[in-house]
Picture 1 (cartoon, one colour):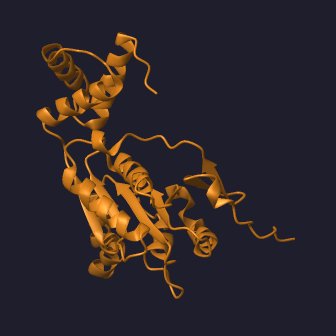
Picture 2 (cartoon, helix red, strand yellow; picture 1 turned 30 degrees about the vertical axis):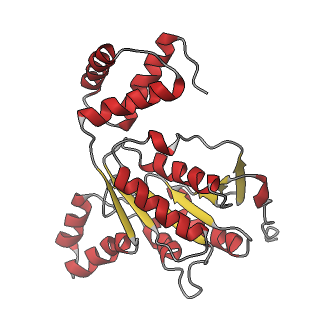
Picture 3 (cartoon, one colour; picture 1 turned 60 degrees about the vertical axis):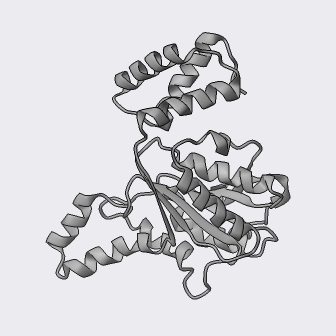
Length: 265
């Protein structure tokens, strides 16, 4: 009565896949939604570090799992997808597999599927965080440590989060106040982020970086606007949103391109 074993997908059919459950399957992604690496402004150090780490892995050399944490809208997920494209452009057949946080309990089955494949994979989980009584973090240890089998040599794990320790501060404080041994209760969960060899922080951008992002998008997509008008409109747009980030810059650019009648490919 058990379901048939999951057949290995045709990994050569696509550069990226999304993992789904019920039933388990890897869905190929014909075209990844991403921006060029050169358009990501203000995150040079994180960009160079992640690119170097990913290239090492793609070439069969030692590399670290990476946690990209920090301000929302500053390109954490964009940089993972852009680095993947850059590595492939350098001739490395690296595959990207996206895993939803809700599907972490199934990660063992996914790793078994990837373990024997003749490719190298970056397993990517976007917006990873844990709340009260959330046990999914235990499944994540299978990716980071691998248990008795060890993490597959051909799999690397990248995650993004708004939180450096993957959980809210009030959750940590609650553990300290209600546990018999507070330090042990907190240590078990906080130590999860320590299992990432790379911590890359993303912080709010300056106004000059914000304007440079928009100018880069305009140049890339052929949208013409003078500097004075762009500056005035972009700052007003930022003020109405109450925030300044790469995401806000892109949203202003989409509005600008629409008003200028420019189609974004």
